[in-house]
Every structure is written in structure tokens, then in C-alpha cells.
Picture 1 (tube, helix red, strand yellow):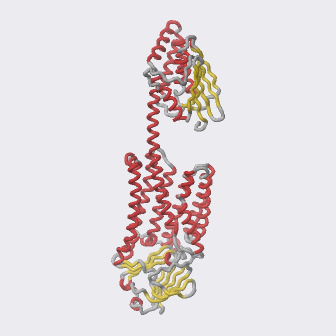
Picture 2: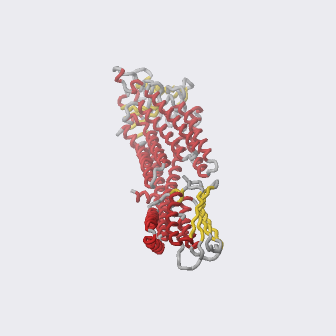
Length: 615
């Protein structure tokens, strides 16, 4: 699994993933063309089943164009005329309705068809949701055999009247959006669903699985749980689920028999998708204040969704009745989230680009909210803006994931180099001649001062143990730990040099951390190349101090010194010990080392550790 993810995140793998999205997009386009292939046995363009005229909200009568949909908003529409001439040629007539009641009847009253519901004649405790919510149309599908119509109707001799009522106070749907009629034969409505919606739905099922597994698993493979990737994966999952519902809602009543439950399912998936968008936006915020406000905003919106669901289930107000109020809450929450993201962009170019990438979705959402009240466009802009935004976000996240993968590889390489550097430092510090000198001095003390010899042996053992422990230590340690190790090292060197080596400490602070064994190479240089090279010996001083922005460790000696501008001697040695020390300090603590020296005066090594990043 890890190898596969690594291949995906590599250069060629990233190209393959992006290419797969292009292929899926092309497949989606082809899928949309399938209805034209099935035109021989399904007619999907007959939105109005009567040829005649119609009136909106008791207004003037207008002629019907059977080839054009009625895209006008309404509360009540009446259509009168004769049945469309296509109907007798097919076996089935299918009505798909959304939030409307309809009644189709003959002008002489001999035939009537309606989707209105009345409470069943059973005890109320046995009612289902739709039995209680008889005032909620929901999403319904009615399939009728054309043979069930009177012969006078099919022969177009009888005048018919179709009445459609939108029972909500705010008209948020046009006639073509809430009522459609289709004629089919062979497999009927199921055959129609297979060709029209099922291929698109299966495509969005892939999007669900992609969001559910790819980004979260990629996050885990990189070695840590990335909250932003998890939120994006959740957003992809709910996007796919939302689009599945939007694609299949016309046919949902075929397997969810309760039309009010169909309504609840479609609305809830939309609201949950919006909630997941808010969560993803919050995951890209850094400042504590913006994250806190975002949390409150998300909770407010989720509480509004829960309240709308409870009102629906309690038959107080269904999800369509509360939609205008939810649009207002959504608009306010969206404005808050945009404001928070704008605050994040102050001085942050990356955050600004991220904010702008959501502009297609925001603009489409605003247009839809405006259109709910103005009815100017009659189009659902949200899906278009959403498709553009999500496509960009997916490509962006895959690119970001690839960078994270490269960073993880670089971190692993750095850890490997760090381990090698620590081994090199340990080997450079435990040289055979140092061990020989220490053991010889201890052996001489065994006869002169056995007690001191015992103490020296324990100190030497602790010193060796500290060097070995450094190989397992991957994090910075408190300076007090490093200082304790230095004292053991200098105790042993003191046995060797006796009065020629003096040690002084000026420790003003120990409240900081640094890599283990990072100061000892500086002290070793002071002893070996400074004081040790001076005929009458000298003093090594170890000091620490705190400034406004950093902690400093100063190792100085009054030994022979050297000329910093002179070329390095070509003595066949690699001199990697000091370079490894500088690299460890820089990589682990952001510190740097400054060395000054003068011939005959001594040397000073200053380690500066920034307070930023210190625990």
C-alpha cells in the first residue's frame, strides 16, 4: 500500500492522477450524451403533456409550445387542452414531481388522477412519516400505463385539465424544475433511469470512494494524521453523495417509497456537504481567533440544519418550507467564513490564492440566493460553480500532497544524515588515545588514591554511556543534561592535564534545549587545540546567557588561538566534527555558531539559539 501511494505522489504518479480526472470528465460528458442514444424508445423532452394553453396564478392564458419547457415560477398553474399526440405511441406515462401537488382530469369529470394523499384509515400510532405529513408533497414518481386512460383521451377527442399547485409561501422552483412528464416503453421508468441518471450516479460513486480513501490514506502514509486532508476527503465524499442525490432525485421514490423521506434525504445531503465545505475552510485557517469564530459559525449552521430536520420529522414545517430561512442562514455563515479567510490573507499570499480559488462557488451561491427571490434567471448556478471550484481544489490538493511527500522524503534523508553525523561526532569524541589516556590515569590513581580512582572509573563509564545514548536521542535535550555530560568529560581531561587545565563556569540560565553532545566538540577543541597546545596551560570557560530573542552558550579559552583568515592546514584530516555540529544545531534548533580567535590570545565559540521554536 505504502509503495503504491508513494508512486502516486511521485512525478509520474501525479500526472497520472490528474490525467485520470480529465478522463473522468470526458466520460461524464459522454454519459450525458447517452439520452440521445435512447431516443428511439424514450422521450425525455415532453415536459407538458397537454397541447393547449396555460395560466399562472389565475393570470392570462398563454399558448403552450410542446417543445419548450415552462420555466416560470408559480404557486398554481392550470393547463387545458388535449393530450400530446406522442402519448398513445408509448406504453407508459411517468410523472416526476418535486414539492408539488397535481391533478389531471377530463373536462367532463369522467377521469381524474392526483398525487394528493389523505391519512389512511388505520390507528394513528401506526402512521408512517408520509401518513402524518399529508400536506408535504415531497418527491414522487408515478408510472401509469397508457392503456389505463379512456379511449376518448388517447384519441384526443376529450379536453383535459392539469392543475399543479406549489403549496409554499415563497416560490423557489419553476414549473419545469418541479414537474416533468416522460413517456416510455420496454423497461419503463427503470429503463429511463438507467440511461438518464445511473451512469452519472456511478461516476459520483467513484468520487465518494476517492474522497473517502485517497486523501485520508495518503495522510496516514505520510506518517501523521493531517486534519486538512481528512476534511478535504470528507468534503469530496459529501460532494459525491450530494451529486448522486441530485442526479437520482427524480427517481428516488422508486426505492424510497415515502416521498417525504426522499425530500429529507436530498436536503440533508446538501446541507451536510455545505457543512463539510465550512470544515475544510476552517482547516486552512491558522490564527486562533479565526479558527474559534469559524468553529462557532459551523456549529450555528449545523444547529440550524438539525432544527430544520427536527421540524420536518415532527411535521411542523418540512425541509422545503424552511429552505428560504436556511438560505439566509447559509448566506450569513458564508459571509462570515469569507471574512475570516480574508483576515487570514493579510500578508499571506498563499492564503489569498486559496480564498480566490473559491470565488466561482461563492459567486454561484450568491446568484442562486438572489434568484430565489427575484426569479430572473431560473437556473441553478450552484452546480456549475461547484464543479469548477472542486476541480481546482482536487488538483491543488494533489499538488500539495506531492510536496508533502517530497518533504517527508527530505525529512527522512535529514534524519539519516543526522544519525550519521551523531555517529561521526561520537567516533570523533571517543578516540582511542583519549580512552588510553583516561584508563592510564585511572590505573595510576589505583595505587595513589583508590577512592579517586573509583570515582574516576564511574565518571568515565557515565561519559561513555552518554555518548552511546546520543545515538538513540532524536530530539533536543535540556541544557542541564548537556552540561552534566560536559562536566564528566572535563573531569577526565582534568586528570590528564592536572594543573595545566582550569575550568570555569558562568551559567546564568539553563531553561533551553539543544542537541545532545552539540557543545562537547567546542569544549574539546578548546582543551585540545587551545589550552593543550599552550606550554603553561590555561583556562576553559563555559558560560550561558539569555537575550531578548535568543539563548547563548559561550565556550572560550585563553590558549594559543589561530588566525581565522589563514587557509586550513592540509593535514589529511576531514575535520567533519565541527561541520556536523553546526548542521545539527541548525537543523534541530535553527541555531548558528560564531567563532572568533586571535593568535596568542585564545578562541571563543558562541552558539546562538533563537527563542522561537524553544519549548
